[in-house]
Image (cartoon, rainbow, N blue to C red; front, top):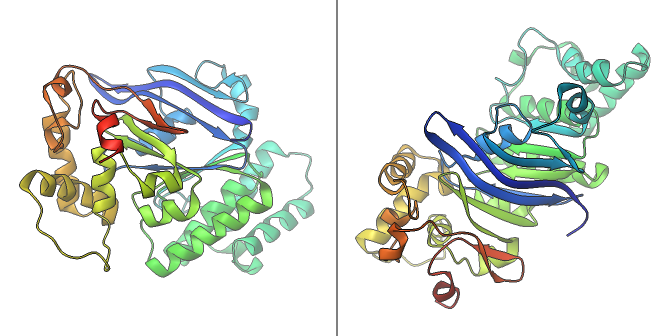
Length: 338
């Protein structure tokens, strides 16, 4: 991996007595794309917002080029924000309905590049609109005059106006038509190549994550359960939850087979997050959270076909099973070869 820009260590986010994130640690290098996957309610959006201090963290460190974002004061954090940008999940809700596209894209320039003249600012806005596939003449339109895909392009343009070194994409294509999803993904790839931006790409669409990412983090009920390179994860997933996520992705070449009740419950609960976010999948995830997330032990044990008594006594920690491949499972060494 290249130089680590972002180093997250033991990040914890707690709402009352509920721990939304627990001991999350990973690194992100310059120009690297790290995918973050997990079903609805696993803590993906919470992690994205905690990294940027949009919500308070309860513990841990988030070091950006050596500066801990969680402990630094507002005066130190403010200039760093130009390098840390986010694209939100809902493209229309993330835009101010009272601001034109031109005003939306001009705002970050007015804040961080005050020396720019109005003419230079307008030129930058027009260039960025062209880069994201929108006409320069759209600067005077309002968000309600655009489609969902166009609004997402505007959101990406706003995030890229300052050429940030880190872009966090929180489910940027989940609310878009499939045909538009491909356009947005290709746009993100083009912008990353042009500006050398590192990306944390959050999604439940594993096909998109596989296309974009160099490494993948698998999150379950606020804990990382598997971290691996893209090819290693898809070729040989180890954690039972990761296997369930991959098994839930529709594959027309896979023969239909009956599964056991336990395995079926695992796949059914994961299907909503991995294959489309259906209500059934989300309910399965919520049931798993309620049943398996009791204090102590592995949170996934009530949905796991490989659970054993030890799983109820101690929570597993991430440990290496291969080069750059870590798994949090008491039976990880057996599952590597199964």
